[in-house]
Image 1 (cartoon, rainbow, N blue to C red):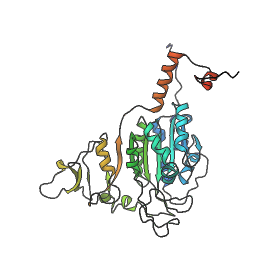
Image 2 (image 1 turned 90 degrees about the horizontal axis):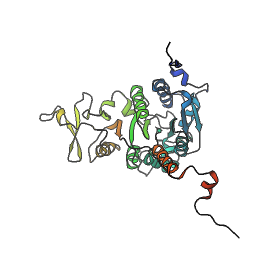
Image 3 (image 1 turned 90 degrees about the vertical axis):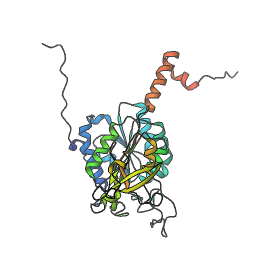
Image 4 (image 1 turned 30 degrees about the horizontal axis):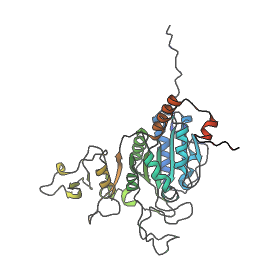
Length: 347
């Protein structure tokens, strides 16, 4: 007989195991339904026990997500989900921590926490459902709404330029930046898996249609009649080709991106830029394909992994520092920690 104890084989989880008993309460047709479906579909393949998964959300329509996942979770306070998730990961680095926010929650009141989470690089996953509007509070413009947006809080049109979330994340030293959309389930599933596989803070922006207050904001990227011309799907090691017949390409003239017609004599796919998701300069250039034009030319919006970098995680560095100090000085008492090195005796 073998003296090796037989390990208990856990049954494989299904998407139904990740669906809670709570009634899902979003507006009919809301893109959040698709995001929830894709997350629940992907999670059984990640091989993580349900009790080791935590979802942290802020405030907004997206924040209800925590109720609908059969995992641990916390519906926290407006804009502070990233801070709370950082605390969870610091205390329990073995957990798989997921943050869910909307564009208002993440980039307005939560903007400061967002940029510092990107910089610190905790090993957490940040999903931002971007519908370019405040849906829960009934239709005010948000930090990602386009200039000229007519909404309840801007009846004559917004006079502000919007955040480009990808550029914001890259500027904050994010180690993983990606974008997907609610109406492309297979692509979203692939991006969720990539986000999970990344060791560090993974930021995944998901375009999400708000059927009530911002219907069709991303129509040109999701409709089959226009998608091929307006969306650029990034693949590491593959040329940047797009168009109805894959007949357009993007090349660099120095650091200046240029669109070329691959049907035109003298142009070939060999001239097209091959995407390198580990190249920060390239990522910044492509992330700039955002507001419709780039130096006078109309460029497609990028989807996929925009940037990926391997670098140390905050919680690992913190543990290493604590372990090193304990090895040199021993483990102090709580009283010693609270009193610090400088104390005074009052006579």
